[in-house]
Image (tube, rainbow, N blue to C red):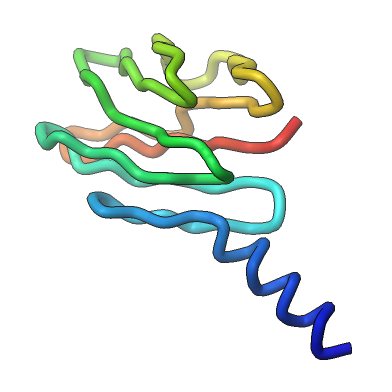
Length: 100
């Protein structure tokens, strides 16, 4: 029973961040980047990086692939992950990275 609890904890904490914040579940992480800073984080075993935010569009790099995202568009697939832009404000970019 203790091993199962530790495994669950390890899966939930599969996200880490050096800049911005992350909120993770077993199969997805929501990453909040501050606009105007060089920000990156490691989520679900891959690096996610905010490259640029311009108007209603952002460019992110996930697992080495550059993606152009807008709010409301369907998730873009990168390998075994689906990446979408949840929210974009004057100060923050919120990206969701989920396992497919």
